[in-house]
Length: 361
Image (cartoon, rainbow, N blue to C red):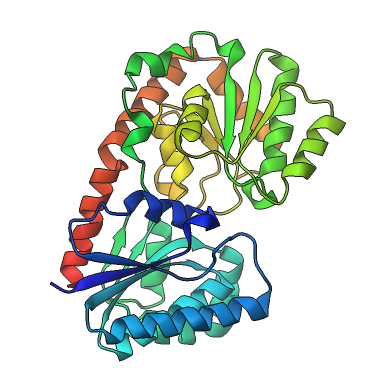
């Protein structure tokens, strides 16, 4: 059997896609090679010229690999955003011209760019991406849009991954114990500290809750462009019990999740964020927005609570539903933990992904 070449950003990029493939590395039973393409430090960019030159260099390396005749298929993971969708469309075209099958995994979906694409460039999108042999998406909404645009081949609905090490030796008794004293809950925000992740809405929501529940605390785990500004914002507004950990990985990430009580994810737009599934796996109720693949995951009263609003006042009302009902928190926590073990754990996801690869090959 020929190999599959998986294109992905460098692990140093610290984004959801790079984290996803770092977890998957060396876990496939099929013959798979990885190739780094695209950002090496995303979300940091070096400017348009540098990005284009790097993309061209990546393309030449990619073509050289395909000319070796070792690969039966390539998989690229892209976002429906201006630069990424152009770059990866070229990779798909190059693969098909060289007689190699192509799998496209749409990881992100920029709704603003979608409007531009539909109004101006949909035929170009079809010309490149409809040559793919199959597609993978993280939301039923994304699948419906691709079908409405005319893609006739199979579109697979998938999730991101929870690494088993996150829940090693985690008993359900430990999960529910933290809700015995709802007055001392620890709200966790674990994501890049950036405006589109809803960081200021998160801080303002906590400020509202803190006035009524003085014992609660807020942990912000992550780094990003807004980190220092958010620290200053917290200080200037005299918001107490907000703790910044910086970027967390490995054991520190496990500790952050397990010390949390409720996971807060007010992001403006997403594909399928790993962190939400990870939070569910460790038994955290989730308060957030039903964006991207979360439309298919978040369910009021079962996984936590969600709202289309970005209002801190609305978010605070959702938190109050959890704080007021410890037994509801416990039932949600157990439901999230069991659902994640059944659907999102690495072994389950990789089994489904490999079944897609086998169909294509």
